Image (tube, rainbow, N blue to C red; front, side, top):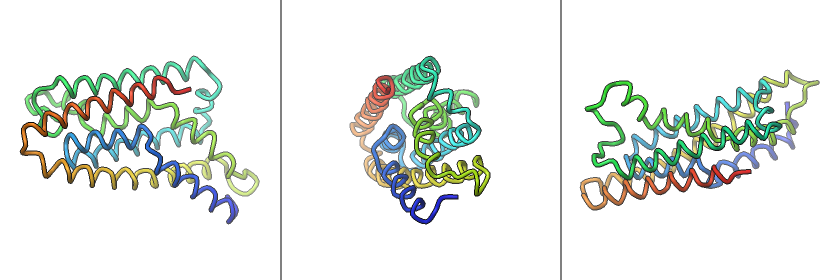
Length: 210
């Protein structure tokens, strides 16, 4: 387990990571402005679940593949960028807006369009999250005092929880703004376009990640 001094360093680093405006928090912002607090909270949960998968993969050593294989990193990066751009274009061209779910579609399509599901996929396809855990957490793991995978997972889940709290604050604030303006037709059009452009921009940021 980390020492007392290492806990301070770890929590401070995790807090800075949580507060930095990365793809996760910007995705939550875009979804909250588009669909309100409910959609924002669902996207927060999706982000957290996707990041948790990265934590487990890192604890098991699977994320080392992304850190050492240029091909694997590029494949995940490109897939994530394409997925975010697809979500952005879909949001812009979509003519109906009922909080992100089209009730006229089948259950499978509604499930695929869920902000929770999309949040999970977007986070899973963000290789920088995996590399963050691989770069940060090993410094605080001491195999001689406790099983390394358990400590790795504990620290990772703490970092995920801190990021989720920041994302939740963004969702509540942005969702409140969207809720007050939801009955304004012009706002709803601008809201949809802004959300779409934000996700396209996120796709571009992921695409140029090194």
